[in-house]
Amino acid sequence: GQAQLENGKATILLPDYFEALTRKQGRTVLLTPLFDSDEEGISELFYSPAQDGKFTVEAANSNNPNQKFSWEVKAIRADVSLLEYEIIKQ
Image (cartoon, rainbow, N blue to C red):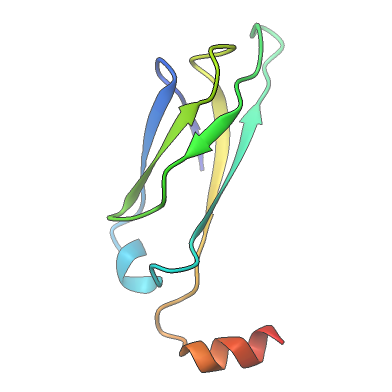
């Protein structure tokens, strides 16, 4: 998805089915700041763990407190057994 910080912070709400379909361990959030030529700078971004159907993104500096960004959450499906996942991964 895409989102934008407001005063250096944003909360991303995940779809209702996310918690039911994914395992809690091993979730990863990927963030990519978007640059607009009208902006003064780019803020480095940090995130909280994806849990309870959401995660939070914050700016590490004040370069751009309204930074736009793309996000992606990767997770292991809950309906695949861990052993099956390890075999497929190899």
